[in-house]
Length: 356
Ligand code: DNO
Image (cartoon, rainbow, N blue to C red; front, side):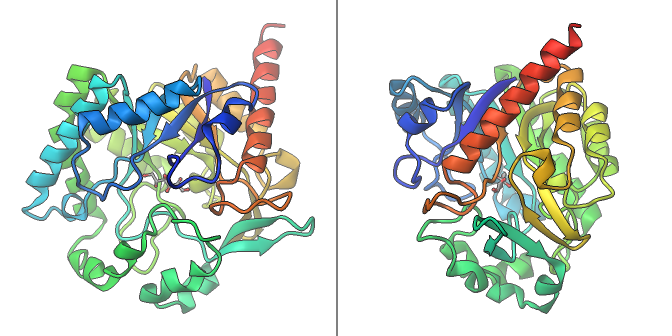
């Protein structure tokens, strides 16, 4: 595996490449052209500029998170052809710049969903949190407003204000889309892009739905072992793979994370590893990465990745806000750096232990 950090680009991120470079064991970044709307074409020279900037710092680009998928593709609208063609050209332009890993999601309307961006924990740190009770009481159109005050002045990935202004229209687009239709549209999209992925050896890595169940009555399919295996089989190509995100699949306590990892051998191209602390099955907060701070056994998660021979990029995921840092919620420097060091430590110990 390669330890990486997510970086949003110098225009958007409070963390610098120079800081990332000093985290022991981190050699790559997972980045994006953050200003691009879903469906827009990424030009070859724009990508080259990003590559040059990252490489000038002594790091390299390990993958893209995300090339977002336009809602016309997710809903199967006739205009999807235009956006699929753009997606294909974007993939080609990425490959020409030597980038061969693309994380994306197939979540309708909302990307990841949290009801609090700064819940205070007993040690004074603040974390992202979710309660189903709060979602049940909320009008989806007010979702963005309800968290807007806690974004620390940053742009939240997946929660761009332009997008949130169109929530009503977006909901209408999904009126006739149920889980089956969403599976069908995903299959269509993957079948159209796989020839390009085969030609350029590009690994696609779908991110799970977070939380891993339907919110606001919208369909959600990338939620559990059964569905993700269905997706792997329906387009049975090693380039059709997954981002294994422990914090997203882990929102559903019925998901056995190490077992899911083992069942996806050969198809996990990217891993997001973080811990959650459950206060009840429908109330969780994002803990430090350390096992003892949350509800997951992080050793078992890393061990499962090790056992299947996982060799892709991994990144610590959302961190707590600590030591007075002001950053994009979940994406500060300090706690993610602690997470990277801890995950690297686990990996080294598992590797050395397995040779005994
Ligand atoms: C949240 C992230 C997601 C993820 C997208 C992938 O912090 O894990 O926004 O990047 O769902 O497309």
